[in-house]
Length: 343
Image 1 (cartoon, rainbow, N blue to C red):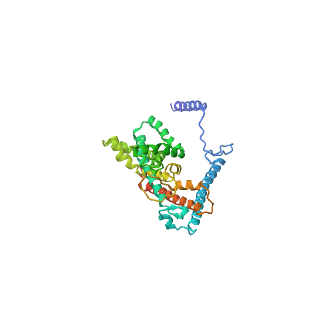
Image 2: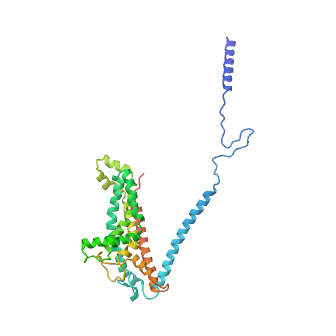
Image 3: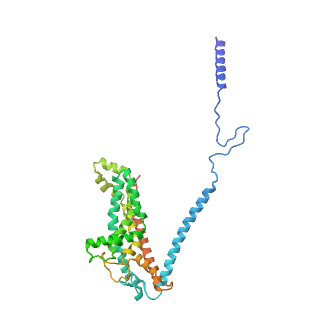
């Protein structure tokens, strides 16, 4: 009996060996470990040299350094020429900042009239661009369907591609006659700050609308869904949840729009007026010369490089640079101060 059981176990072992002999047994090798009779192979997970990465990194570094050096060179030129202007003995810094007459021929270099016209035109530009830009952004972000948004967004972006000189002639040949018909020819000058400001608002509309839409679309959908779950309507959700959550981006777009309006040249040069300005007024229906408009007009004349008129252009450019730089700093501060961070 015992011998029979031992023979059965031997037969079973032999059958198992025979069945497994025809199958290929899996061989597990570690990466980089050599088997008997083979050379060790290099692991595929090791870092491979890529020369193109170094070239791209060097190119990007060069572009960054070049942009920084260009900015430094521009500021250096503005500072050097402005320093020569203020050390000429013909004008002091308080007279430049607080003077109420800008007539270089008579030796008057008060920036306030030019600054006044710049502020008036920029104000009317924001009166047009702010409600239309934010309203359009809210519609595209919250109300428009995907197909509608795909059609309207390119049309809105077309406005950003129109040359500013075209906007200037549009303000002079269309907007001004319309304003004179509506408000009266005796009340609106042919060259006026109102038409220039309104057309500037149309020009910067895509900038504000695009930035505002990005800020609104960055608000998480969970906030909208929570508002709907509490029974809020679409308008209540937009006005009380989405817009407050995107407030930092909306304010930043507003400040960037102001900076864009302040730096505009061709529209105000063609439609707002030119010539010495000797008054401060908030009436937009009269002519007025802005800082950029004056720079464009005077720089096209015959000015010697050592004249006080030529150096005054750099002083105006430096003042405009400081103003727009301050607006950019305010925009960054507002973005950091009121930014909402969601998980």
